Image 1 (spheres, helix red, strand yellow):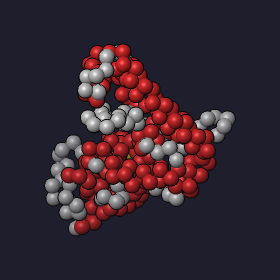
Image 2 (cartoon, one colour):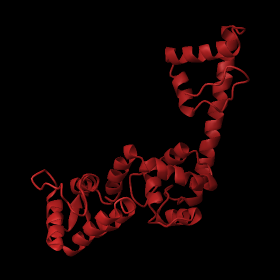
Image 3 (cartoon, one colour):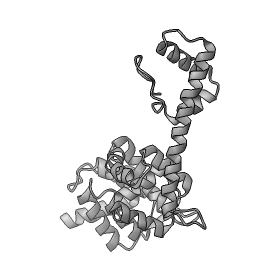
Image 4 (cartoon, one colour):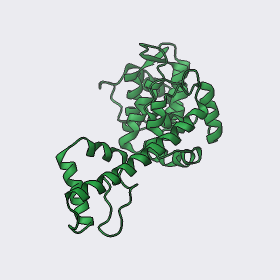
Amino acid sequence: MSFPRKTGSPNPMSIKANDVDLFHSGNPIIVSLFDRLWVRLDAGKLDENDRKAKRTTYLSASNIALMQLLEQIDKLFDTYANEMTNLIEASGIEELCSDLKVGADDVRMLMLAWKMKAKKQGFITQDEWRRGLKALEANSLEKLQRALPALEREVMRPSNFKDFYAFAFRYSLTEERQKTVDIGSICLLLKIVLGSQFRPQVDSFTQYLQMQKEYKVLTFDQWMGFYQFCNEISFPDLNNYDDQLAWPLVLDSFVEWIRQKNN
């Protein structure tokens, strides 16, 4: 929670939108915090009624700021959304990519979908759009464009990247009850998501997947297993790979194929 400094006038924009919800929840701890804040600011000169009045004004300004932010975000949403469905569909996403000057297969677009917690590939709901842009503090195209490098750094943190990698697979499940992704899509996705970090492993694995005949699709567990493989296994010598451990069978076959090539 952001509090003003002890001296000077409080900045009504410094409290986040969630703080308003916390205060109005009636939580006595939160109310007490606000009471102590105003006592500190006014050196005890205000009585209870004055404090309540100032506190209400303070939070009302924050509410107004939040409403203005969402209004601007919604206006940007309308630029790309289909008026009939109130969704940003494939054509709108293409237009957005063009305006942001990024390709549709740019990993940053997938990162943006992750930030929005988008559910269905090729579609963005208004709630998803609001969630993502509010978190990025982007209420204009220019601000969204400037937010992309920071978003990329956020995703690339180890604490976030595994979740993003898992999201990339689930986001590719375009049909109801779909559990697997075809090999062609897997190869493209691996290059987009992991190519910058583990290029040798990705190039070798996608080459193997494209030439082998046993696997037509990959499951989520196989997808996540390859991420673990990249992080844990010495490549290309594979000295610490133990096929007696619980690796997915597709990785056992991949390692056998590499060893045969090296021999």
